[in-house]
Structure formats: C-alpha cells, structure tokens
Amino acid sequence: MEGLTNFLPIIIMFAIFYFLLIRPQQKKAKQRNAMLAAIKKGDKIITIGGMHGTIQELTDDSVTLRIAHNVNVTFDRGAINSVVSASSEPAAKSEPAKIEEAKEESK
Image 1 (cartoon, one colour):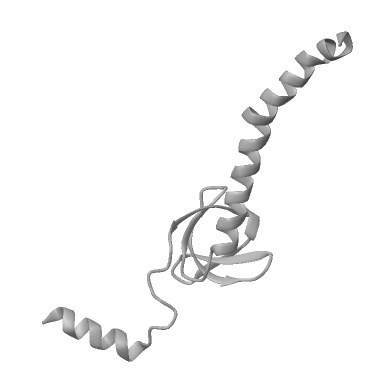
Image 2 (tube, helix red, strand yellow):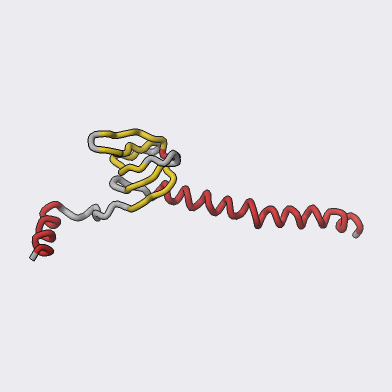
C-alpha cells in the first residue's frame, strides 16, 4: 500500500501531462494531416512562410503554387499552413454548363 502512495503523485502528473499536452497535440496533428490530404487543385492556401497562392499541381510530396501571373513555385506539401478557400468549381461541371449558367444569371 505504501509503495502505491509513493507513486501516486507521479501517476497524477503523467495524467495531467497527457490531458493537457499530449492529447491536444495529437488531435491537432490529426486535423493537419486531414487538411493536407483534402487539398486539391484550385485551392487557395497560405504556406508556413506566409506565401499566398493557388494550387496548380499536386503530387504525393510536393505542391506547385501560382503566386502571380506566370509565376509558379514548388513547395513541399508539409509547408502548407492553412487553406484560405477551397476551389469553388465542382469537378463534374462542364464548360458549356458554366457558360449557360452565366447567361441565365445575366438576364
């Protein structure tokens, strides 16, 4: 019984560290990995260094961003900090449908 009471403060400290430090960090890492897996061509993003751009190409480990007209820069996929806005075009929408929709909106 006395051996357990000697280790009780250490066990309590480990529990506090787990719930205040380790668990939130694991949740944040899981969210980041989900965000990186969900990015797609056309998304507007911000890199860790503060570079704003639109995704032009994606591979498993790198991303090509368009940061200005005719200026494309390749970054490591892990350098993405956040997605500002997802691409607004659905992938299945065709060009004639977009033109027809624009004509209807202008009426």
